[in-house]
Image (cartoon, rainbow, N blue to C red):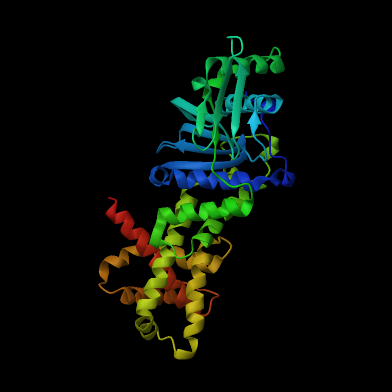
Length: 373
Protein backbone atom coordinates (compact mmCIF):
# COMPACT_ATOMS: atom_id res chain seq x y z
CA UNK A 1 0.00 0.00 0.00
CA UNK A 2 1.27 3.50 -0.88
CA UNK A 3 2.52 5.54 2.07
CA UNK A 4 0.20 8.37 1.07
CA UNK A 5 -0.42 10.03 4.42
CA UNK A 6 3.25 10.63 5.19
CA UNK A 7 4.32 12.09 1.85
CA UNK A 8 4.25 15.81 1.27
CA UNK A 9 2.26 16.27 -1.93
CA UNK A 10 2.56 19.16 -4.35
CA UNK A 11 -0.94 20.61 -4.15
CA UNK A 12 -0.68 23.27 -6.85
CA UNK A 13 0.82 26.60 -7.83
CA UNK A 14 1.44 27.68 -4.22
CA UNK A 15 4.00 24.85 -3.96
CA UNK A 16 6.29 26.76 -6.34
CA UNK A 17 7.04 29.42 -3.70
CA UNK A 18 10.73 29.16 -2.85
CA UNK A 19 11.23 26.63 -5.63
CA UNK A 20 14.16 28.49 -7.21
CA UNK A 21 16.66 27.16 -4.66
CA UNK A 22 15.53 23.55 -5.22
CA UNK A 23 15.83 23.94 -9.01
CA UNK A 24 19.28 25.47 -8.66
CA UNK A 25 20.36 22.62 -6.37
CA UNK A 26 19.06 20.04 -8.85
CA UNK A 27 21.02 21.68 -11.67
CA UNK A 28 24.10 21.94 -9.42
CA UNK A 29 24.09 18.17 -8.93
CA UNK A 30 23.39 17.56 -12.61
CA UNK A 31 26.57 19.49 -13.42
CA UNK A 32 28.57 17.98 -10.57
CA UNK A 33 27.68 14.42 -11.66
CA UNK A 34 27.66 15.11 -15.40
CA UNK A 35 30.63 12.90 -16.35
CA UNK A 36 28.82 9.91 -14.85
CA UNK A 37 25.27 10.91 -15.85
CA UNK A 38 25.92 11.58 -19.54
CA UNK A 39 26.20 7.84 -20.21
CA UNK A 40 23.54 6.76 -17.70
CA UNK A 41 19.78 6.20 -17.81
CA UNK A 42 18.03 8.35 -15.20
CA UNK A 43 15.33 10.90 -14.61
CA UNK A 44 14.92 13.81 -12.21
CA UNK A 45 11.68 14.31 -10.28
CA UNK A 46 10.74 17.68 -8.82
CA UNK A 47 8.36 18.29 -5.90
CA UNK A 48 7.56 14.59 -5.96
CA UNK A 49 8.14 12.55 -2.79
CA UNK A 50 10.85 15.10 -1.92
CA UNK A 51 12.16 18.46 -3.20
CA UNK A 52 13.95 16.62 -5.99
CA UNK A 53 15.09 13.10 -6.80
CA UNK A 54 17.73 11.61 -9.08
CA UNK A 55 16.33 8.22 -10.07
CA UNK A 56 18.79 5.82 -11.71
CA UNK A 57 17.52 3.07 -14.01
CA UNK A 58 18.68 -0.10 -15.69
CA UNK A 59 18.37 -0.53 -19.45
CA UNK A 60 15.06 -2.26 -18.75
CA UNK A 61 13.88 0.86 -16.88
CA UNK A 62 13.89 -0.75 -13.46
CA UNK A 63 14.92 1.67 -10.73
CA UNK A 64 18.31 0.66 -9.34
CA UNK A 65 18.78 3.51 -6.86
CA UNK A 66 17.47 6.94 -5.90
CA UNK A 67 19.20 9.99 -4.45
CA UNK A 68 16.51 12.01 -2.66
CA UNK A 69 17.13 15.62 -1.63
CA UNK A 70 15.48 17.91 0.90
CA UNK A 71 16.92 21.34 0.00
CA UNK A 72 16.58 24.31 2.34
CA UNK A 73 18.24 27.69 1.98
CA UNK A 74 18.82 29.42 5.29
CA UNK A 75 20.00 32.78 6.57
CA UNK A 76 21.12 31.30 9.86
CA UNK A 77 23.15 28.33 11.04
CA UNK A 78 21.32 25.05 11.71
CA UNK A 79 21.60 23.33 15.07
CA UNK A 80 20.00 20.46 16.94
CA UNK A 81 16.43 21.39 17.79
CA UNK A 82 12.80 20.98 16.78
CA UNK A 83 13.28 22.27 13.21
CA UNK A 84 15.97 19.77 12.29
CA UNK A 85 14.28 16.88 14.13
CA UNK A 86 11.02 17.45 12.22
CA UNK A 87 12.96 17.76 8.97
CA UNK A 88 14.69 14.42 9.61
CA UNK A 89 11.34 12.80 10.41
CA UNK A 90 9.98 14.08 7.11
CA UNK A 91 12.98 12.54 5.34
CA UNK A 92 12.45 9.15 7.02
CA UNK A 93 8.85 9.25 5.78
CA UNK A 94 10.14 9.95 2.27
CA UNK A 95 12.32 6.85 2.58
CA UNK A 96 9.29 4.75 3.56
CA UNK A 97 7.32 6.18 0.64
CA UNK A 98 10.09 5.44 -1.86
CA UNK A 99 10.16 1.80 -0.73
CA UNK A 100 6.36 1.63 -0.99
CA UNK A 101 6.19 3.28 -4.43
CA UNK A 102 4.90 0.77 -6.97
CA UNK A 103 7.40 1.59 -9.74
CA UNK A 104 9.41 -1.59 -10.53
CA UNK A 105 12.81 -1.73 -8.85
CA UNK A 106 15.77 -4.11 -8.98
CA UNK A 107 16.14 -6.67 -6.19
CA UNK A 108 19.02 -4.75 -4.63
CA UNK A 109 17.37 -1.33 -4.81
CA UNK A 110 18.80 1.31 -2.44
CA UNK A 111 18.22 4.99 -1.79
CA UNK A 112 19.95 7.92 -0.12
CA UNK A 113 18.14 10.69 1.74
CA UNK A 114 20.11 13.93 1.77
CA UNK A 115 19.41 17.18 3.61
CA UNK A 116 21.00 20.06 1.68
CA UNK A 117 21.52 23.59 2.91
CA UNK A 118 23.68 26.55 1.95
CA UNK A 119 24.41 27.38 5.60
CA UNK A 120 26.42 25.57 8.26
CA UNK A 121 24.96 22.75 10.34
CA UNK A 122 26.42 22.57 13.86
CA UNK A 123 25.56 19.43 15.81
CA UNK A 124 26.48 19.81 19.49
CA UNK A 125 25.61 17.75 22.59
CA UNK A 126 26.84 17.49 26.15
CA UNK A 127 29.03 14.40 26.36
CA UNK A 128 28.63 11.58 28.85
CA UNK A 129 31.81 12.80 30.55
CA UNK A 130 31.02 15.76 32.79
CA UNK A 131 31.99 19.07 31.28
CA UNK A 132 32.74 17.55 27.88
CA UNK A 133 30.97 18.97 24.82
CA UNK A 134 30.85 17.04 21.55
CA UNK A 135 30.43 18.97 18.33
CA UNK A 136 30.45 18.23 14.59
CA UNK A 137 30.01 20.88 11.89
CA UNK A 138 28.88 20.51 8.29
CA UNK A 139 30.42 23.32 6.22
CA UNK A 140 32.60 23.93 3.18
CA UNK A 141 35.46 22.02 4.82
CA UNK A 142 33.47 18.99 6.02
CA UNK A 143 30.71 19.19 3.44
CA UNK A 144 28.74 16.04 4.32
CA UNK A 145 28.14 13.60 7.15
CA UNK A 146 26.11 10.42 6.96
CA UNK A 147 23.97 9.73 10.02
CA UNK A 148 25.80 6.46 10.58
CA UNK A 149 29.15 8.31 10.66
CA UNK A 150 28.12 10.86 13.29
CA UNK A 151 29.62 10.66 16.77
CA UNK A 152 27.58 8.05 18.65
CA UNK A 153 26.48 10.51 21.33
CA UNK A 154 25.19 12.94 18.67
CA UNK A 155 23.34 10.25 16.69
CA UNK A 156 21.90 8.85 19.95
CA UNK A 157 20.63 12.32 20.92
CA UNK A 158 18.98 12.76 17.52
CA UNK A 159 17.34 9.34 17.68
CA UNK A 160 16.06 9.93 21.23
CA UNK A 161 14.48 13.29 20.32
CA UNK A 162 12.90 11.87 17.17
CA UNK A 163 11.38 9.01 19.19
CA UNK A 164 9.79 11.55 21.54
CA UNK A 165 8.12 13.33 18.60
CA UNK A 166 7.06 10.11 16.86
CA UNK A 167 5.70 8.56 20.06
CA UNK A 168 4.61 5.05 19.04
CA UNK A 169 4.96 5.37 15.26
CA UNK A 170 8.62 4.36 14.99
CA UNK A 171 8.62 2.66 11.58
CA UNK A 172 10.68 5.45 10.02
CA UNK A 173 13.61 5.04 12.41
CA UNK A 174 15.07 2.36 10.15
CA UNK A 175 15.53 5.05 7.48
CA UNK A 176 17.90 7.13 9.62
CA UNK A 177 20.89 5.16 8.34
CA UNK A 178 20.06 6.32 4.79
CA UNK A 179 20.22 9.99 5.80
CA UNK A 180 23.08 12.42 5.31
CA UNK A 181 23.40 16.14 6.03
CA UNK A 182 25.28 18.23 3.47
CA UNK A 183 26.46 21.75 2.83
CA UNK A 184 26.00 23.02 -0.74
CA UNK A 185 28.22 25.87 -1.87
CA UNK A 186 25.54 28.16 -3.32
CA UNK A 187 25.12 31.85 -2.41
CA UNK A 188 22.09 33.12 -0.49
CA UNK A 189 20.58 35.14 -3.35
CA UNK A 190 19.02 33.56 -6.45
CA UNK A 191 21.11 35.56 -8.94
CA UNK A 192 24.31 34.55 -7.17
CA UNK A 193 23.23 30.92 -7.35
CA UNK A 194 22.65 31.24 -11.12
CA UNK A 195 26.04 32.88 -11.58
CA UNK A 196 27.61 29.91 -9.77
CA UNK A 197 25.79 27.49 -12.10
CA UNK A 198 26.93 29.43 -15.16
CA UNK A 199 30.53 29.06 -13.98
CA UNK A 200 30.09 25.31 -13.46
CA UNK A 201 28.58 24.89 -16.93
CA UNK A 202 31.40 26.87 -18.51
CA UNK A 203 34.01 24.66 -16.84
CA UNK A 204 32.31 21.49 -18.12
CA UNK A 205 31.77 22.50 -21.75
CA UNK A 206 34.46 25.18 -22.24
CA UNK A 207 34.64 26.31 -25.89
CA UNK A 208 31.70 24.10 -26.98
CA UNK A 209 29.23 26.77 -25.81
CA UNK A 210 29.28 30.45 -26.68
CA UNK A 211 26.74 31.65 -24.09
CA UNK A 212 26.81 29.68 -20.82
CA UNK A 213 24.19 31.94 -19.19
CA UNK A 214 21.69 31.23 -21.95
CA UNK A 215 22.53 27.52 -21.66
CA UNK A 216 21.75 27.48 -17.92
CA UNK A 217 18.48 29.34 -18.56
CA UNK A 218 17.56 26.73 -21.18
CA UNK A 219 18.20 23.84 -18.79
CA UNK A 220 16.21 25.52 -16.00
CA UNK A 221 13.28 25.79 -18.43
CA UNK A 222 13.16 21.99 -18.54
CA UNK A 223 12.00 22.10 -14.91
CA UNK A 224 9.27 24.67 -15.60
CA UNK A 225 6.64 22.24 -16.86
CA UNK A 226 6.93 19.91 -13.88
CA UNK A 227 7.39 22.35 -11.02
CA UNK A 228 3.71 23.35 -10.88
CA UNK A 229 2.22 20.10 -12.19
CA UNK A 230 -0.31 18.63 -9.78
CA UNK A 231 0.36 15.15 -8.52
CA UNK A 232 -2.45 13.15 -10.08
CA UNK A 233 -5.24 12.59 -7.56
CA UNK A 234 -2.86 13.99 -4.89
CA UNK A 235 -1.03 10.64 -5.01
CA UNK A 236 2.73 10.59 -5.51
CA UNK A 237 3.91 7.92 -7.95
CA UNK A 238 7.27 7.64 -9.70
CA UNK A 239 5.40 6.21 -12.70
CA UNK A 240 3.90 9.69 -13.25
CA UNK A 241 6.01 10.94 -16.16
CA UNK A 242 4.53 14.46 -15.91
CA UNK A 243 6.69 14.98 -12.80
CA UNK A 244 9.93 13.91 -14.49
CA UNK A 245 12.72 15.53 -16.44
CA UNK A 246 14.17 12.62 -18.38
CA UNK A 247 17.81 12.11 -19.32
CA UNK A 248 16.64 12.07 -22.94
CA UNK A 249 15.29 15.63 -22.66
CA UNK A 250 18.40 16.79 -20.81
CA UNK A 251 20.77 15.24 -23.36
CA UNK A 252 18.76 16.65 -26.27
CA UNK A 253 18.91 20.14 -24.74
CA UNK A 254 22.67 19.90 -24.18
CA UNK A 255 23.12 18.57 -27.73
CA UNK A 256 21.25 21.58 -29.09
CA UNK A 257 23.23 24.00 -26.90
CA UNK A 258 26.61 22.60 -27.97
CA UNK A 259 25.54 22.17 -31.59
CA UNK A 260 24.42 25.80 -31.72
CA UNK A 261 27.99 26.97 -31.07
CA UNK A 262 29.25 24.68 -33.82
CA UNK A 263 26.51 26.00 -36.10
CA UNK A 264 27.53 29.62 -35.54
CA UNK A 265 31.13 28.76 -36.34
CA UNK A 266 30.11 26.83 -39.46
CA UNK A 267 27.89 29.69 -40.64
CA UNK A 268 30.70 32.20 -40.15
CA UNK A 269 33.11 30.07 -42.17
CA UNK A 270 30.78 28.87 -44.93
CA UNK A 271 27.96 31.40 -45.32
CA UNK A 272 29.01 32.56 -48.79
CA UNK A 273 29.04 28.99 -50.11
CA UNK A 274 25.77 28.12 -48.31
CA UNK A 275 23.95 31.17 -49.66
CA UNK A 276 25.25 30.49 -53.18
CA UNK A 277 24.13 26.84 -53.23
CA UNK A 278 20.78 27.46 -51.54
CA UNK A 279 20.21 30.45 -53.85
CA UNK A 280 19.77 33.01 -51.07
CA UNK A 281 19.86 36.45 -52.69
CA UNK A 282 21.81 39.24 -51.02
CA UNK A 283 18.69 41.06 -49.78
CA UNK A 284 17.42 37.91 -48.01
CA UNK A 285 20.66 36.92 -46.30
CA UNK A 286 20.03 38.82 -43.06
CA UNK A 287 16.58 37.22 -42.71
CA UNK A 288 18.02 33.79 -43.58
CA UNK A 289 20.69 34.10 -40.87
CA UNK A 290 18.07 35.15 -38.32
CA UNK A 291 15.81 32.21 -39.24
CA UNK A 292 18.79 29.85 -39.11
CA UNK A 293 19.78 30.99 -35.60
CA UNK A 294 16.19 30.93 -34.31
CA UNK A 295 15.60 27.41 -35.63
CA UNK A 296 17.67 25.88 -32.83
CA UNK A 297 15.38 27.38 -30.19
CA UNK A 298 12.32 26.28 -32.15
CA UNK A 299 13.62 22.71 -32.30
CA UNK A 300 13.49 22.71 -28.47
CA UNK A 301 9.86 23.92 -28.44
CA UNK A 302 7.49 21.03 -29.17
CA UNK A 303 4.71 23.48 -29.99
CA UNK A 304 6.65 24.66 -33.06
CA UNK A 305 5.05 22.04 -35.29
CA UNK A 306 6.64 23.10 -38.58
CA UNK A 307 10.15 23.08 -37.16
CA UNK A 308 9.54 19.74 -35.43
CA UNK A 309 8.43 18.39 -38.80
CA UNK A 310 11.68 19.50 -40.46
CA UNK A 311 13.87 18.20 -37.64
CA UNK A 312 12.13 14.81 -37.75
CA UNK A 313 12.54 14.66 -41.54
CA UNK A 314 16.28 15.29 -41.36
CA UNK A 315 16.67 12.75 -38.55
CA UNK A 316 14.79 10.10 -40.54
CA UNK A 317 17.05 10.71 -43.54
CA UNK A 318 20.36 11.03 -41.71
CA UNK A 319 21.60 7.93 -43.54
CA UNK A 320 22.09 10.22 -46.59
CA UNK A 321 25.14 11.69 -44.89
CA UNK A 322 27.00 8.54 -45.95
CA UNK A 323 26.42 9.41 -49.61
CA UNK A 324 27.96 12.91 -49.79
CA UNK A 325 31.47 14.28 -49.39
CA UNK A 326 30.38 17.92 -49.07
CA UNK A 327 27.91 19.17 -46.45
CA UNK A 328 26.15 21.71 -48.62
CA UNK A 329 25.38 19.11 -51.31
CA UNK A 330 23.68 16.91 -48.72
CA UNK A 331 21.77 19.91 -47.30
CA UNK A 332 20.57 20.85 -50.79
CA UNK A 333 19.40 17.29 -51.50
CA UNK A 334 17.51 17.16 -48.18
CA UNK A 335 15.85 20.49 -48.99
CA UNK A 336 14.72 19.27 -52.43
CA UNK A 337 13.40 16.00 -50.97
CA UNK A 338 11.47 17.85 -48.29
CA UNK A 339 9.91 20.30 -50.76
CA UNK A 340 8.90 17.50 -53.12
CA UNK A 341 7.34 15.26 -50.48
CA UNK A 342 6.16 17.28 -47.49
CA UNK A 343 3.96 20.35 -47.22
CA UNK A 344 4.88 23.17 -44.87
CA UNK A 345 3.39 26.50 -43.84
CA UNK A 346 6.84 28.05 -43.60
CA UNK A 347 8.22 30.28 -46.35
CA UNK A 348 10.79 28.85 -48.76
CA UNK A 349 13.50 30.93 -47.05
CA UNK A 350 12.54 29.67 -43.58
CA UNK A 351 12.47 26.06 -44.78
CA UNK A 352 16.00 26.39 -46.19
CA UNK A 353 17.21 27.94 -42.92
CA UNK A 354 15.55 25.22 -40.82
CA UNK A 355 16.87 22.40 -43.03
CA UNK A 356 20.37 23.85 -42.71
CA UNK A 357 20.06 24.12 -38.89
CA UNK A 358 18.53 20.64 -38.57
CA UNK A 359 21.31 19.16 -40.69
CA UNK A 360 23.99 20.55 -38.36
CA UNK A 361 22.17 19.34 -35.24
CA UNK A 362 21.49 15.87 -36.63
CA UNK A 363 24.98 15.48 -38.11
CA UNK A 364 26.58 16.05 -34.71
CA UNK A 365 24.30 13.47 -33.08
CA UNK A 366 24.77 11.02 -35.95
CA UNK A 367 28.57 11.28 -35.79
CA UNK A 368 28.57 10.78 -32.01
CA UNK A 369 26.37 7.70 -32.42
CA UNK A 370 28.72 6.21 -35.04
CA UNK A 371 31.82 6.98 -32.96
CA UNK A 372 30.33 5.36 -29.84
CA UNK A 373 29.53 2.06 -31.55
